[in-house]
Image 1 (tube, rainbow, N blue to C red):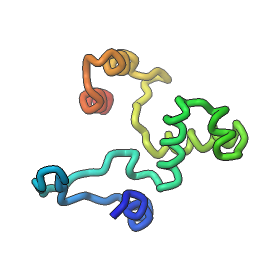
Image 2: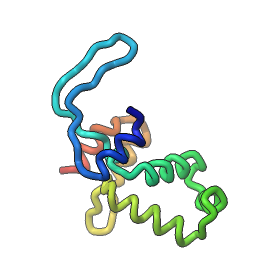
Image 3: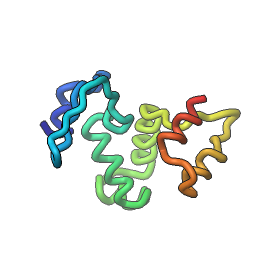
Length: 118
């Protein structure tokens, strides 16, 4: 099953993956696995995010690619960002120290998320 089919099937509802199999060696792992935040987005929003990353965050490119206006791109990005809630804000400021460490490669994304959840 393709990712976009799974997204359509679940219709945005939360799901738990119970079995994962690695194709290279056939090893299967069973348990309760949550999907990453990006996978909880609709297929349309996932494509939009991939296009945005592929265009290196260029809103101008997004306008051209999707035939939509600057405000429409911004509104859609804001709506998607609210669904993800990846970074906690404290007094209007991001946890710049954690993000800085992540950017410098001192910590990985999983560690950054753990710290930001605290």
